[in-house]
Image 1 (spheres, one colour):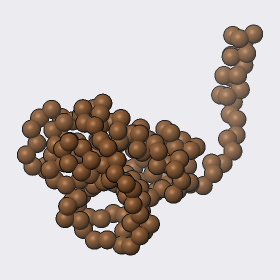
Image 2: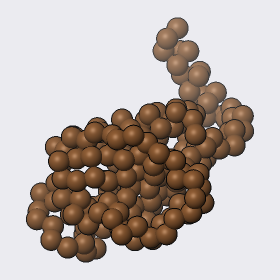
Image 3: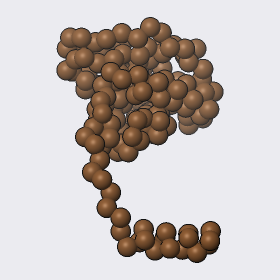
Image 4: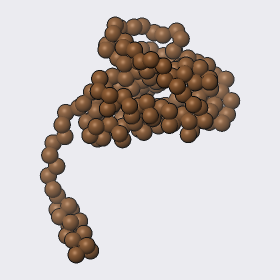
Length: 174
């Protein structure tokens, strides 16, 4: 997997958790998930976002319940005692912020993001998957990544609107 997709994710995880929840994270050694796995007991809550366009694949944030509840509380400012619909929405928003922040720095930053899916099953069942472990003062969580370059974008055909914008810009700039 190309490091040009991984580094933006690492930066986004750190940035989003620090600025929105005041949580500092340290990344542990990455590993490759090279065989199918089943449901994880430890990291039993996931949020998955699919990407399409110039970047294709999936980014999954996996949390133990305790870390998920702590991050929900950090985002909402309210005590989170159980995972409910509002908590799932908060986790989806965290994933949206991470992936949205990262995708702007992907090569050919024209990727589209899906709506976050929150659940308890393993969504990246077909290896290889890069697993990035993160440690916080509230516990450990994982970011699983399976991304690749999408098909090249077709050349853009200039429109009449483009010509009008160019004409106006030329008139203003001389």
